[in-house]
Length: 94
Length: 416
Image (tube, rainbow over all chains, first blue to last red; front, side, top):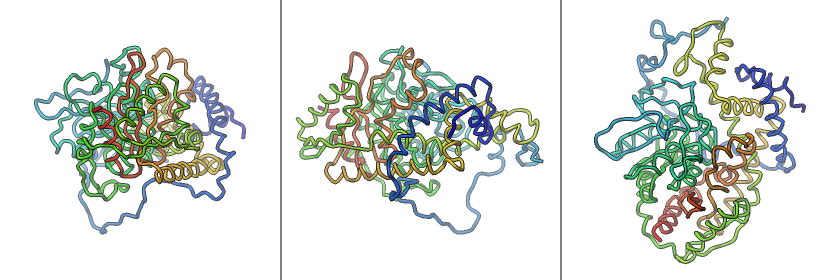
């Protein structure tokens, strides 16, 4: 895998972050440095090891399918200036 | 000294300073990021609600690395806290504002910090205070502005072990609003204070001692000798996956962070702009303005590690290394009750020294706190002594839900 400006640019587009030219140059160097160092993991044989997504013993949590106490509309909208008729107003999608 | 982003006037009650990534009803909460500028939560995080119920009053929201992204609290949008022991040095990160405030306070004050890869232990060690990071899931994460959901933990930062035990006793409750909350009945952890540690087996990992600078290692060795004098049995141990835990931790933490931070888009709260252009243009514009340099770096690295074609090599591989790290700890806890080691390999560095470090150099300073974070085990940093005028932390680690044991050992050491 080649770590270059093109790759970092592609990643930034997926992450919805616009990079300046100097950010792009800096992050490309950082990517090379960091990924080279982290490649040590590939030397470890983990074929028979199960991945751990969470250290806690997780169980599915179910509840009754009924309306529960939740954030009321006025409170949900209190931190935005983009609202209309009790709804969030967003940018154009099409 | 910039320890607080928001100061709150209160007339009575137990003063509580809260890391800014923990939601407080009616009080500005930014997680140290410009992208959350102006965000005032309409509810308290469960940990804050429970602390208030126990008599605490929030006196301020503390500075921190943006979203917890840092080891030195230098990646802060709203002020960099300075170490009260030497103003030219860092408080540690990312709960640096809380630890600095607690260390600088002449009167009794309690702190609520949050750790993903050591963000309670590190600043506690650098500032010479007590930091208690409980078992993953013991304290609800509801109301925490998340960094990495499988790693984030809220815990006390205080002046004494007994204070930390008291606060943990009040905030450790099952909470149905957090799907990873542990169903465990409430416990009074202060009952572990004042107990003898005679006969307790304390493991000292060679790898951890070797990674510390000589001055730190010497100070921690003296602390371990003191534990032996108090009756504990010291057992040399080895934790062989220590080095691998660091890249595994960063890959997992940044992968989770990149998805968690996808919700910040300038629409519902925080930084907002004029709704111009399509959603892609608008979201990208706000995110590019609102996130700081380290947040952008971590979002990009995390996005990359999860991308098709790279996911198995990085993200899944890291999750498998995490399994090996956990197994290593589990084997160790069949032989010992508690692990003792330096919290950080160094004392708080000067800001001028931090400036010279590359991002990778900075990540590597976390080498002693990330293995235990990956495993989600309880950990306690207690002041062990000084190198010059700078504090050194003794790190005590126990098995899942064995908070009592590290409180017992930490308190016995503190009182001796």
